[in-house]
View: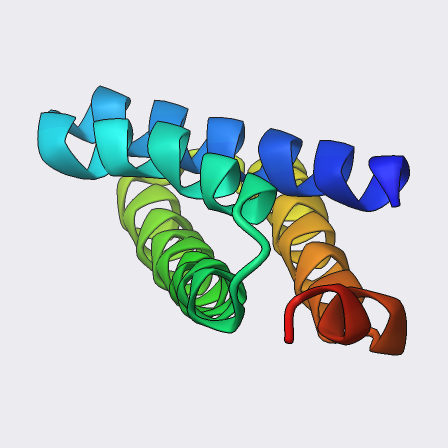
Length: 109
């Protein structure tokens, strides 16, 4: 259980830093607060964390596509950046899969 929570925290720390770098302070703060909902053993808290994690996958995918297009257009290398962002997407997806596991769902009834 602790590994699952740590992965979620890392996922949302990365997402928070992305939003902060983008200048979106509200989403950055929300990304820091969302993992703390896991300490409340209510089903709606788990659903909120899951929805924000789904949103994180979407944000990272859009960011990956946009950065690849920008780098290709200005003639910069893009493969290393794509590998790094793909790893972040995989981490976020792994967190999402762990949030949907039977163990987690049993704890949040």
